[in-house]
Length: 426
Image (cartoon, rainbow, N blue to C red; front, side, top):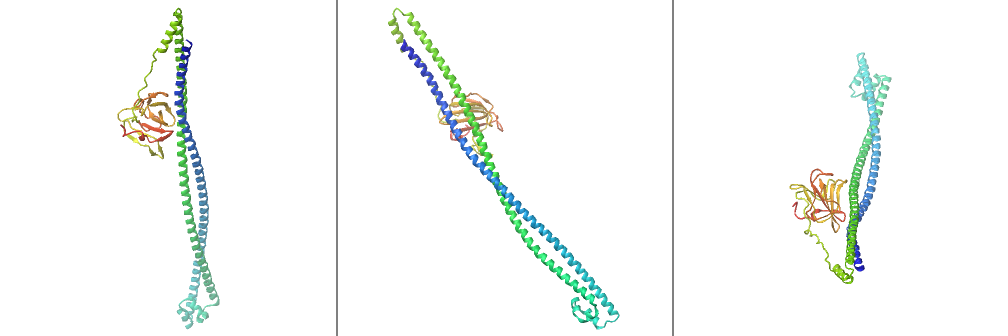
């Protein structure tokens, strides 16, 4: 009797341990996936730190380029002001020359009028000599003109002519300076154009670095969302397994208690022939058949399409970032099925843009994801077989219309689902 009771108790412990070992194996797989996801997060954080530093360097380079351009622009503006001021001087000198020339012409006209007056009152051949001169300078050089024109007129004409020459010389100098300034201005404009090119190239580099930071931040956010999903799945699995363990222990304890009660009752009823009854009871206990449960049928090999329909978007670089799955349109049925047998590790709303999301773990580090569903037919911890209905096509989360977003992740990283599927869209 004691040996049989101990055997029953040992069986209870064995059942509880078996349940615990199964639970520990599943949890260990989840925790392994979680460790890999955290390792990927750490790697992305390192890349993000490097990209952020590069973006900051690019921004500083852009600031330096803008400062250099400002300095060049200041020089160009200063030269341009000098050119403008020089032009004002040239214009002023030109006006002075024009006034002096006009005064000289007035004096010449007065001299001519005086010569005519001399002619009328009789000046003889000396006046003819003056009039026949080709220019005023020739007339001055001739002694006949000097005898006709007074000393005051001669000095006035000479002074005006000297002023004209001096003013013209000054304007020539200003013109030369203007040419130099124009050349300097052209050189500075070339420097300014080069500085603008440097600024523009550094602005492009800064924008590219900022875009890389944005992409890494988005990837980091997605990995953190996956980490949260896995942690929640682990917690739910542990809770479910703890409940299963307790339920199994309770059932086994009840069975042990019932078996012990039956044994005591049989002993009391056969007290007269205790030895025979004991032997009979022992034989009956040891020979009693054990009920066995046939294992569930295994699913077919390979993965099946989770939805019959055309693929509208492949696993590729899209909209500035990686599209981590394929989008399947719904043309015949709205029924989403499991691509392979496994265990549901998450089933519910995802705040990271996937909407209603189902995650199924298939072992070997492979997890499939089914996003944007309108409704979900399974729950976390449930075992599903390939082809089993798990959800209905919808457009929840960040979605532009009813379709299935299907992903395959290996050790936490997204891979092309077509590696697991054959053909196309059923």
